[in-house]
Image (cartoon, rainbow, N blue to C red; front, side, top):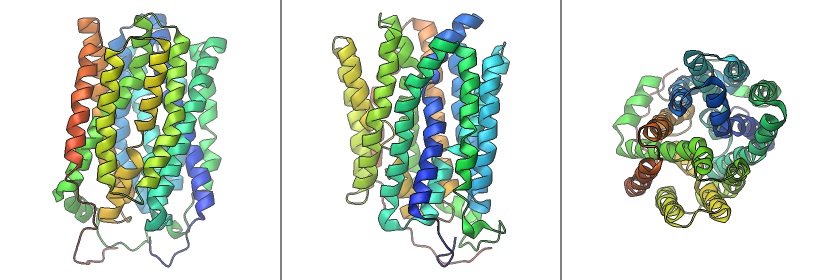
Length: 405
């Protein structure tokens, strides 16, 4: 988008963008609450459910690349609108799926595509194009914090819906709720995308991709984000069942997921705000180290409701706090013209990690009767991610200007 074109007001941008992320991320954050009701009702293994959610994360990441391309080219409004419709359809399909294939198509493919069009890559592209570099990391932190509040709000809401209406009707009601994304998307219609496809660009898509994938810091950010996805999706989906296996009540798991969402509000905002003051690579390295330390302490300490709530609170501070510094670093290095697309590629790496985390959780549980091995993998990966973020170079890349329309 050219600098001379009008921008959305920052208030309108953050209110609408944050509300969309709140709904989209809030609904999917509670999917772990459906693992046991669905598998027990359908007589499926945990791996069957976990595989469908793993597909969801993989499709989300892959489709996010193309959603980002479309948002960069035509504006976010149309992409978000399509995503909301797919989300509602996927939730209704998830409620009525009677075979593992249909469950994977609805909860995996449809909802994965929906999330690609209604979450961070698309929303952050709008923020990048409409917020100055001096406030960009902060604005991304605000949007992520709002999405985190959605997790805090929606998880107990989803638990309430399941207990009062049953797991199938709860999914249908959530399908109606995500349709609220449609009017919110209207507030993100960007003036520069009137007459879509006419915006002048410094690079073609292929030039931007070639530049990014040859740049070592982009590769390191992608590798770190893989670890982020592995850790958070494994914990988000499997922790309710892990706690139930240990004799905890379902309410403990619901409260733990809600605490993750609540403290994530503070963690993501703080990460975004700090990204304006200190090097973002150091923020990322600290987050990954701290996650490994928190998981280690959780496993060695006696398991009680108090220890669960403490772990959830600490993990909440670290949960999506990687999102603002990672995306702000991509914008800082490569600019904002292709930000949604490049963020989509980084997020695809995140979702490959998510696929591995959620699927391995179910697979290794079915093989060993325990989640222990996956917990240990999550610790090792956190240390790895911390180390590889330290060499990232955050300064803007130097390029020869070639204008491509």
